[in-house]
Length: 285
Image 1 (cartoon, rainbow, N blue to C red):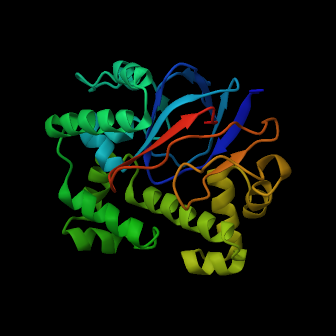
Image 2 (cartoon, rainbow, N blue to C red):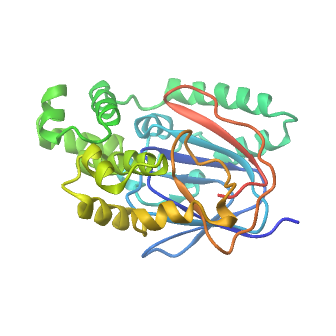
């Protein structure tokens, strides 16, 4: 029997587009009223969110490199950072009618046909989209490659910009400044290492934190729990067989205690480095 589900989602180095087929999801962030939406766009974040649904959620979640989201939607990403919005009200969405796309996907009989339609639509949007800066893409790739460890000054030198100009272009096309983006990517690496069984002291050293206390403070600020609480919660009985995390090979989510075991999920990740698809039937947010 399908039952309501609550799930904590931590910051990741991506923007998220959920193309919902029917049922709404309720998303809550600290300091903001909850949003209840069928399709959802969420820009890059530095804070956690709690997603809830009534027992069954159908749709496709698309994980986008932030600069790819800038091109597809043409909206300055700083307007969407740490926010959850209906994608059809993006201020510069033009003809990108996400609700219509979600409806067209819902009636197709197979996931292969849905992914094919997404490829076609995204290719059209990309062709007429706002070009992103090759230097921003290069700087983002360096931050990803180093797990957020590359100093902003060196990053600016690498792409031939001043620190101020890099900060401005990052806010426009990534949504976060380079320092905030580096924090997210560094935390993402730390979660990955902790989930793989590494100790906190070793993880702090590997990820460039000053010490274990620095790691713990950043973890608490950006996920709402300590490293120990996070890794312990992922092993609790109700989360022993959690749904797939939002990104392959990443520890991104916690199923919260009021949830119940979910039904099977169908589909998987597809696409290239710019965006990937994850289909869900009966899965949580």
